[in-house]
Every structure is written in structure tokens, then in C-alpha cells.
Amino acid sequence: MNQIIHTYNKTNPFLATITERYSLCHSESDKSTIHITLSLKGSGITYQVGDSMAIHPLNNPEIVQRVLKAINATGHEIITSKRTEESFSLYDYLTKKANLSSIPRKLISEISERQTNQTKKERLQFILEESQKEAFKEYQATHEVWDMLENEEIKFDPQELCNLLMPLLPRFYSIASAMSTVGEEVHLTVAELSYEAGGYVRRGTCTHYLCHLAPMHEAIVPIYIQPSNGFNLPDEGDHPIIMIGPGTGVAPFRAFMQERQTRGHKGFNWLFFGERKRAHHYYYEDYWQDLVQKNILRVDTAFSRDQEHKIYVQHRLVEFGDEIFAWLEKGAYLYVCGDAQRMAKDVDMALHSIVQSHGQRDEQGAKEYIKKLKQEKRYLRDVY
Image 1 (cartoon, one colour):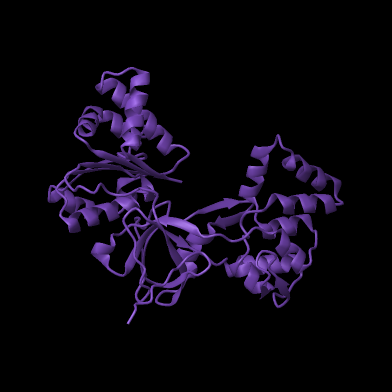
Image 2: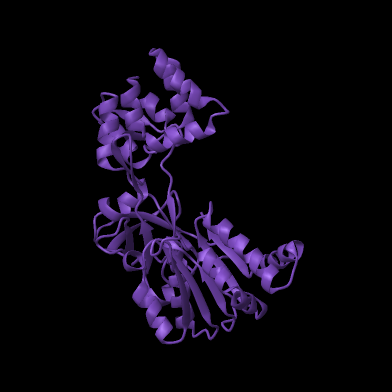
């Protein structure tokens, strides 16, 4: 009898079950990072370390109600998706299909055209100017669809509004587990996004869904696997690896270490982890310390707020620059995961500096050395 293989993707996600959800932070922490375990039982889904999990969230019911109130709708109105031509109740469409946190330019433009209040009209026209990209970003960061509709007092009929909204897209999270260790489960490390703007607490759509809205022990969370683009372990287990993963960037390295242990890899491992405070934000500390005790792992940390001057992972790299370079010369693979805007750039600059200082190379020589590491797939990044 042929085995049926299910292919789960964006249009056909598997409905996973949250079986564990607990905080990785101290109770007095000024931020929230949650460990989430999802069951894949019966799905036939497999994944590799370095892969990501796509989650398709639902919008917060409170936000949906605010949008309905702003356009004087009940939610029972029937609308048609202009992308798929499927019919939905307005409530279902706003809950499952529409991006309600990010205001599209075309919605702002439409409201600007209809606005009769000259002051409001000029403000919207200003942020829509090509030269005002920062002002536009600032407006998007401090408003959601519901309060823009409320503040501007422009009424849309349900179909018209839905045609102007962007689609609610899946969010991607680095997988924090190795299937060889955990079986039919996937582990995620999720930092909650929450900030105040305009007198209202704004929350990340997917992080709030995963950490608070999605019920436990119900097959309800739409997921699929996004394979990594080469962000994986070396085939030969005797190569040493250097892992740089501040914050939730540490997630894939938990998976890496589980896999290395299961496979019996002999190569040594070195982790650079950074966060705000050791006492509040040392994610998976017990696991890392157990590996340190077993002489499988070396860990160097950078807790930025534990001293007057801020220390980040790139500072630790430079501090141990001679050893980093020696490891690279011995064939080490180097991995970076996390923030693309600042951290990854700062780490890259630190690596160039290390190669110049400890490899006795000029600036061009350091560039060529790092380029060769990339070509050999020994300098790999998963940044976002």
C-alpha cells in the first residue's frame, strides 16, 4: 500500500497544536520571550535544523471589532476576496485574511483624497510625498487600520475597505529544536512585540496570537515548514562551529546542539549569546550550562545592561579575536542569526577587524578572506 505524503504550504497549512507555552524571562523582566512547543503528530511533516516555521496568525478579535465599529459594520456582511474571488463574512475576512496592523499606502491615499478637513488632508498628503519616507514609516508605526479610520472619520463600505487592505501573511520563526531529538514536535523561541503609541498598546499580530490568543491543546495553529537556504550544519561532524545568536537569534543554535549531540559529532562548539540582563534574559541557560559541564560547548555572553557601558556580542568577538581567527584557520564554520539591521552588520565589521588584526592582513585582504569563507559556505547568516 502506497504511503500518502501530505504537502503542507501557504495555501494548505497543517493545523498544529500548542502543547507547551512558558516564559524564558524572569517574572520581573521588562520584556517577554516565550518558548512554544507545537505538536506535528500525524502530519508526516519533517524538518531539518536551520529550517524555519511559517505561522499564519489570526487577528486579535478586539482589533477586528474596532475596525467594524469604525465603518459601522456588523461583521455579517458578505465580501469577496479580490485575490481569490472567494466569499467570506466580513468578520472572517478581517480575522483571517486582512493585515490590520500595517496601513497600506493606497488606503492612506484614498482617505487623503476623500478628506474634507483641510488640516488632516494636508498632513496625509505630506506623509505620502516621495521625499517623506521616514514620516510615512513613523505614521505606520504609530497607527493601525482601526484608529486611522476612526481619526480620519472617512466611511468605507465593507467591500471597498477589504479591497484596499493588504493580505495577512505568514510570519517565519527559526526552529529551536532538532527532530532527531524531539520527534513529532517543533520548538519556537518567540519574542513578544508590544509598545505604546498614540495612547494605545500595539502588539505584534503573530506574537500575540501565538503567546496569548491561540488556545492550548487544540489543533488550530496553521503552519508549514520553510526550508533553510543553506543555513545548516557541516556534513562532517568533526568541524568546530562558532554560533553568534543574541536574543531569539539563539533559537537555531539550540537545534544545532541537539542535532550535534544526537549524531555524536565530535567537533567543538562555541556560542556567543547576548541579551539585556543575565538574571532576566538568559534563554535556555540550564541547557547551555549542562553542555558546558560536559565539555561539549563553550559559551561567552554579552548582557548589555548588566554594567554601565553596553556590551554586545560583537565586542566579545573582538575580545576573543585571536582565538576566533585560530578556529577559522582550523576550518571552523561560523553562523550568525538575528537582527539584520544592526547586529549582523556590527558582527560582520568585527569579523573583518579580527581578520585584519590577527591574520595580519590589510583591509582588502580581510575582505578577500571573509569572501572566501562565504564561498566555502563556512560563514552563514540567517538574519531578519
